[in-house]
Amino acid sequence: MRKSLIATALLATLPMIGTAQAEGPHSLSGNITLTTDYVFRGISQSQGQPALQGGFDYAHESGFYIGTWASNVGWVDDMAKKNNSMEIDLYLGYAGEAGPISYDVGAIRYFYPGSSISGVATPDSTEVYIALGWEFIELKYSHAVSKYLFGWTGTNSNSTRNSNYLELNADYEFAAGWTASAHIGRQIIKKNGGASYADWAVGISKDVGFGTVALTYSDSDADGSCSKGEPYCFGDTGKNAAGDRFVLSFSKEF
Image 1 (cartoon, rainbow, N blue to C red):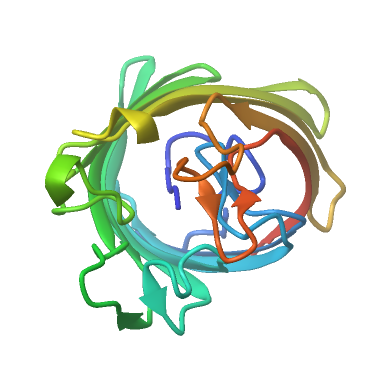
Image 2 (tube, rainbow, N blue to C red; image 1 turned 180 degrees about the vertical axis):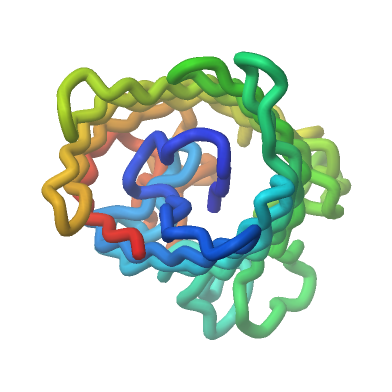
């Protein structure tokens, strides 16, 4: 659910841009990840189950990029859409540097194939984003421009357009092939304070030559204790998607 050409991915459970060799002004890259859980902004998208993820990216030396990424998910089916088991992201943007500061501006569309459910807000969402980086630190802001963000509605089923997410990420290589990561974020759902929350994570990864192995711990203050009517308690089984969890993953870029 998240893409950035500026920073290395904070969590291996999130999409990552590959680093293919460029030929002339153009470069193509791909990535594939196998993870024990798909966690996005502190919330499990796969109901605590393993996920297979992957994508492709095109970048031009001018800074323009475009790409797609996909993963299996477990929260949409029969709650936000029928016959859904996948998330597909489409994104484009422009990245560059201004002195010691890197920047990335773009837009991303989150699409969940399946049949709409009458009277239920669509989970399909669009955000625009801007990220600023310095050394190993990145500050990113994402702003929802679609009518609803991930199917959330406000008071009296109002639109949740202008919902936003602010995050601070750090990704530091402390030894050859070893990287430590930290993250803190704040999700605001407009007109729905009960669905707004903060999340945080720490992780460590190792480049093993043929790929990257990562272990991440994430948590949030989202209310997902699964008593009646509480947010982030998804599915027929009422699983808490917001609880703390360890995630182990393997990623390969090509």
